[in-house]
Amino acid sequence: MREELAGFTIGVTADRRRDELAALLQRRGARVVLAPALRIVPLADDTELREATRACLERPPDILMANTGIGMRGWLEAAEGWGLAEPLRGVLGDAYVVARGPKARGAIRAAGLFDQWSPASESCDEVVDHLRRRGVSGQVIAMQLHGERQPECTRALEEAGATVIEIPVYRWAPPTDPAPLHRLVDLVAGRLVDAVTFTSAPAVEALLRASGDRTDAVLDALRSDVLASCVGQVTAEPLLRRGVPVSAPARARLGALVRTIVDELPRRTVTIKVAGHLLTLRGHAAVVDGELRPLAPAPMAVLRALAQTPGRVLSRTALLRTLPRGADEHAVEMAVARLRAGLKAPRVVQTVVKRGYRLRVD
Image (tube, rainbow, N blue to C red; front, top):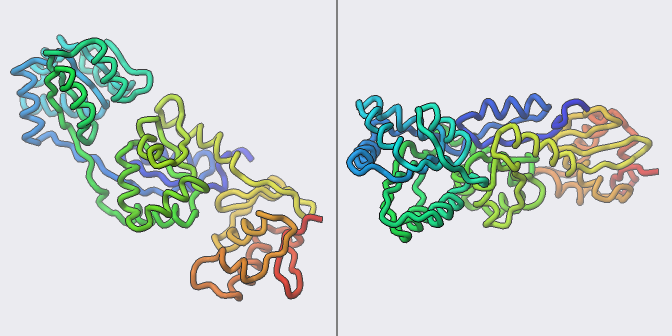
């Protein structure tokens, strides 16, 4: 198939650039579930940001840590509104500038400033290690935050003798409508999505907070059937700490994130030969001899159960356990009938009288 992700369902937790990421996935055939875990609230009129800016003007920083492009642009735009943009650019122009990633670097250069160093990993830990090796004792560091405070980084630099001015340009807030996020939690716990994408570490934490008493079920799903795909190692850290295997590109870019999903998801599929057909199971569809056959959740659940041991007979009771709660044996018969119709290959699923059903492997 030309659409590498056809038949797969992917959750998108990003808010900013969610449409761009969704379009990249849909272009490759994926079904996308949009569920922003957080939203960015700018702080252009925030007293704390203004005070931090004035602190930089009164005590010019020796070092600037630029963490995000949107944050640096927002800071300079806010300063423009206060009539402080030129003085701010002047003091920052004399600082040793560290750009955590290419977006921060782009914002720095667009402002007419020059960055001297960037970490290969794009992580704050690597930035702190670099600065401590370089020496920060007695120096002032302006740390542009990216949505939330970074107490570990601040503490490490202060312990090395630096004075840290935290620049809170924006903060993370819960989504305006939490319903899509709670729906995604249900889909992950029920293993009804194939992958979930994360573009920030706070989004990971937000999804887990939204999971409530279902957190263990969500983590179990992410450790097994649902691919956790993160834009980079910094984003992946909260999941790695919880023992969740993560797929992440070497470079933290949306296009690279999509490419890792394209590489990974098809490798996780099951392909078997049954009743003379080549059958591949994808998230919400089966591929029969190269043709995509979308299936509803109940028929798909039956097919997955039968495909675990092709040729083995599963009773109606056993198949009932794979269906949504509240189903009865009649629902199993309906799911099997819909499965046969959906596959358009009626000989694939065989009825074994008084015993149940199996996939025909002979």
